[in-house]
Image 1 (cartoon, rainbow, N blue to C red):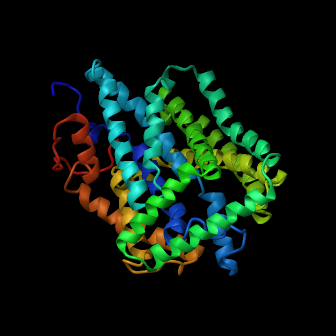
Image 2 (tube, rainbow, N blue to C red; image 1 turned 90 degrees about the vertical axis):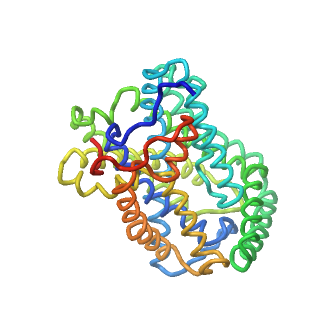
Image 3 (cartoon, helix red, strand yellow; image 1 turned 30 degrees about the vertical axis):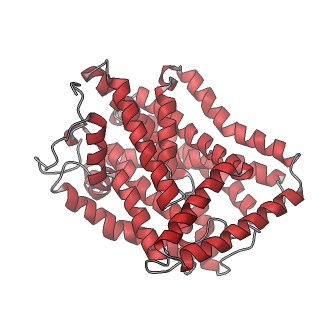
Length: 417
């Protein structure tokens, strides 16, 4: 292989992006924990699984403050990183740049599909890979105005679809769906709560197949793709205009965006909370449709608030030092994301500790924070004191570029500026 392109060295990294990525890992773990701990179909009939007040509060707070915000951060950063990586590849080897990036995306797609069909049905890696293919197909060539129009479309299309479904689907259809999901829940409880490692793998495959073949489940997945595309398009704008790399020059603008986004996100979150408290699984209601739209606005608003808050704080040397362990976790997001699956499935599945259906929302929240803070942060710091790249990131880079990059850390490993 003769390409001159090489992996990004640690000293070339954008510190703010690693910090944001590190916080996104924690938020994703918090939101994924319920689907590790119990069937994703639990409560399909609208019943409350956790009657205790502290669990109800933790559940609603998690849905408003965390749901969708942190995987949106990753799709945002994915697009920002795309602009950086592709520009760097084109500068080093214009003829091979797009081919190298395509190989990188296809490797991610294969890894994500393996994760989704074998190890955990909630995988998001294959979705990022699909979105990455869209980036390569020409989204970067669109004007800013067109990108904004597409963002608005991604917010509105699911609402229009829900309005159509409101007038076409009958209560009998929903009752049939509820019965199917209750059957899935029973099978999940057998496979994950009492079965072997092989039983859990087979049930994982069955759930993922359902998500991509059942019409209503597929509609939910399509909405998720559109939600992720919203922040992908925003990230494309941010990467194009170097918003993160030049944050120190635009702190006034970032501060205004921070507080406007918080206000919009919280107001939309109140509607989401009202819709959740009045959820009716047998029909699509006007409040439910409004709640769906506000959920998408809330996830965008609070994601922007979290990102701008982190970027502002990272401009201060004291906060940058405090964020250093989080940034190191963010330097190996692929390794840490898959490590979360390994830890959680061992804790909850019967082949491991067998905590399936035994931990409520508050316990799930605290467990995610504890595993991230006590295992993933120290492990990331230990690793980067010795090596340049995370273990899976190293293999990904080697497969992408067709050569083994240097692995041993040559410099004292601090957060790269």
